[in-house]
Image (cartoon, rainbow, N blue to C red; front, side, top):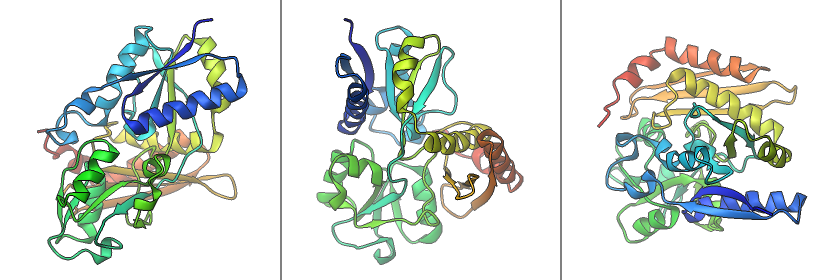
Length: 306
């Protein structure tokens, strides 16, 4: 029997996620053969420039999507925060798994939390979103670009290049590095990236066999929340390199609460909007419209492209 082939980035975190999907599939069918096909993407290779200058997080998925379209793999496993708001023709997001921790993590060997950082402290992050929100609260900090996989980023902290770094808590937990987290940011202080903490499975739109295999892995609440966040991002421009943040959460009455932010890279402007609703796509558009009315379009248009 031909093995089901999973396309994935070759980083340790991406391989953990792909293995997580393989384990879940084989828990349902122990006789299912599943093969991981690791790939090095443009985003993994191009480490010299800030991510937002070379095309954003979509660079972490394009080679994998090309392999999927060419039939070299049967599905792709992605961090949802790396997936652009629009899929290439012929591909679709079939499944979103249950979300892990959504919050950003403060990591430092010297300071217990962000409010302990002295003026001039050097903080590393590859995310315009994280940097803008931190600068909004602490304009006296020095924010610098930080690229590479999780181990590389931690090594740069440990060798003294930074006083602190900010990472997704979900990634640290999945890699068994939760002890490195000194502080979890409240979502009010650092609203997460669109889709943060969630794993998605992308397939070819006409591949009904693979669709049936992965369908039981879907998590309804996470799917609805991420759909709302992505709908907001799509209306704002659909670019995961933008300083855009969003978090949807299911309320006790079954409605969704969606919070969204757009920030200027220097943190001086921070726009916020929120709304509740039952239809995730409509809700995302509503919050995006509110942000656009506040001037989000102007902030995003003025972002430097290089």
